Amino acid sequence: MSRPLPLPFPDETEAPLVTELRFPTSGVTVSGAFELNEFAVLTSDNLEFLRLYIRVRGNLKEVERVLGVSYPTVRARFDTLLRAIGYEPEAADPQGAVLDQLERGELTPDEAARKLRR
Image 1 (tube, helix red, strand yellow):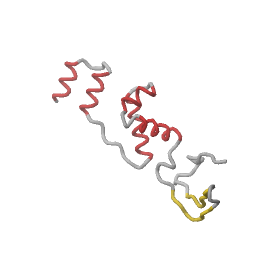
Image 2: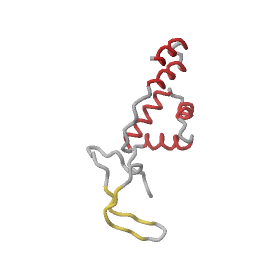
Image 3: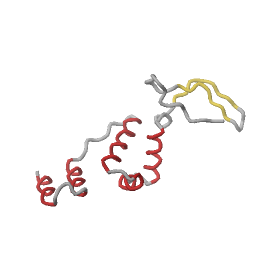
Image 4: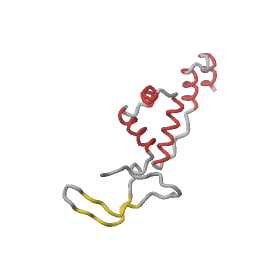
């Protein structure tokens, strides 16, 4: 019976090295040193987020709706996922941040317009 990889593993900082592959249908076993790709070593939280992100075709607003959390929370989880697969998230767009504040009602339209003109 197969189980998910026990990752992350306590006190290990490097990705595991797979040393054996078994193909149940053919009964073939291959020994060697095989590296897992960046997706194979994702935590269960990151993997579930990635599955949802793919299911909604990369629409973070839809991820927000499905999870019932704020857009900044979704962005933070997305940034965590990016780091986990070896990418550094892009710096936030200051205009986008102003528009997000406007959408959440944290700024009036006049305040947002003033900030966008700067």
